[in-house]
Length: 418
Image (cartoon, rainbow, N blue to C red; front, side, top):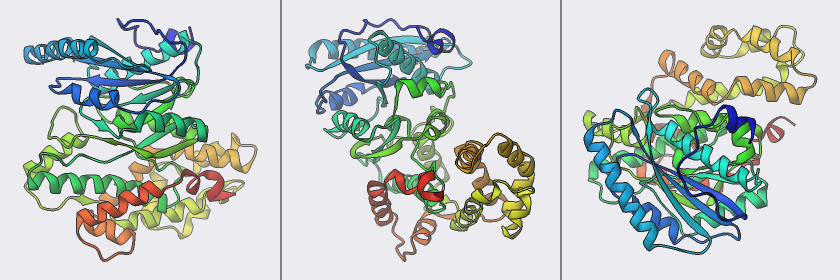
């Protein structure tokens, strides 16, 4: 047993032990108070399979102090999935389900995902596969028919350590207002990532919990999944991405639900719920000028190495950037990184370990709150690409293609600085 499993993992789950020594992918699905889980399972069942075995771990979860209605629904779901498993078998893929009670303090999607992903590590270790792929999926998703096979192929061909899989929110059974909301929300997600890419930020990848994957050894090195009730995907992936060999898999697609929900503090469901409550026509997002200022900061990163007074180099940056750097004690931080670095590549890598995805988001919010108020997502998205388009649906199609065409080496540290 590895140190990770011994010290940091969620306890073993009551699942049948692995039966195939050549298992290469384990898909983890947290399930909470869901009514239609078999749709997601059917989508996986008909998916093309790689030449290694695939397992699917379904983790029905609830707080130990949950409402009786949730307990009842989860029990119904457990029986429904057990019956589905008995009736649906296919060579090369097995489905396992269990139901767990989580402590009230930490009950939520983060701990549920962690329980399943830690179990995937445990199963891979039992068959001696340190490079096994842990693939995250959700109970309200469907996927393209090549999903499993394409993910495995991309990991092997590109020697990936982790990946975000292409996603498109489903637009089925939505009211016109809900449709308008989800189009603008997805546009906001894609705009933010592409704005960071245009600024030259090397860790600008989508962080959607239902469409992410990581190798077992990297999962352990990154400290495993966290226990956050929401945003667990963002925080987890921004520990994985700096290990390198991370990419967007664009040849397959996950289709997350666009449903309204208030089950987590933020995310698609929460965003849709807030959208309907406000009764507004437009969704607002970050001003493009924010990313122009961030780009100016990132261009200076190599010059901070060897500079006796790094803050001196920032003299021509905007007042907003300089104010943020002062707040973050930039001079002291930069000198600490200098002392830990024997060469420029090491310095740059360590600098971005400091200026990670969360730090970048904090800077964006700082500039928004003090210098550049948000504008409509349609204006922001069109300005970023120098377009006169104003229709959110048309803009979303453009941004979806931008993401499909994206190649990770375009924003790699090697490409940006060497």
